[in-house]
Image 1 (cartoon, helix red, strand yellow):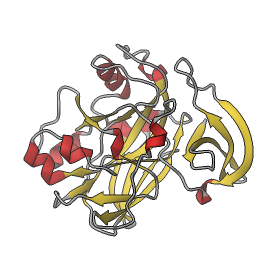
Image 2 (spheres, helix red, strand yellow):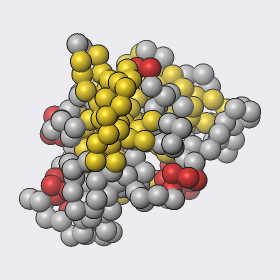
Image 3 (cartoon, helix red, strand yellow):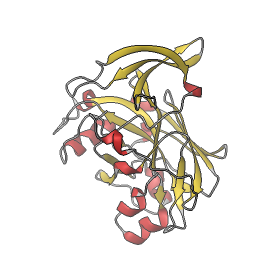
Length: 280
């Protein structure tokens, strides 16, 4: 199943996506599954909406966003770091989430903000101390993400919370899918149409199963939690009015533009109401 999230008069809803005559449509509303089910959704028919015409929201509502650092050897080397021998993780706050087509806001505190296109994993059921053999059974689906980073602050602080945690620094979308296999997915990041990153998940230093085993041995993963799996080489700075696109095989393209913090139209990224109900 592929699904997205979109606003309605009844509040944010999830919708199943199907392809009809070569065009993607949102064809029915779906309710999030319970903790003990990954693919069982309550469905409600609706008038189909072309995905290209829908105003999409970030299709996740995680309790936490766990990120893997330096999971591609070439990326570690391009920033002058050693290739890690152990899995390196850090956290982004859920308040960093950003919808497709929404604007990444340049913080006043930073002079260099970088794009980092990544494959993200959505957890489907409660996961604690998973083995590598069972790790992928806890996955609900996969989605494009951009681990936006204030590179100068990352170097200055030593630890990465501020550099990775600004509002709008975690664009996610356009949809979640369980119809792809994570072993060999092409990842491409473009800025203003120019290819900046091109990688493949086959080049992970640590496999997704290893990552889930490692993370679930530290903290309990809950349904809807998000894991960003690392970025290929080619990261670089963004500037005001840039458009950045992250494309992954079978997962569409996540598109966002860049603005400055003085823009009067900037709104909260994650409405409070979305946190009051059940998690995605």
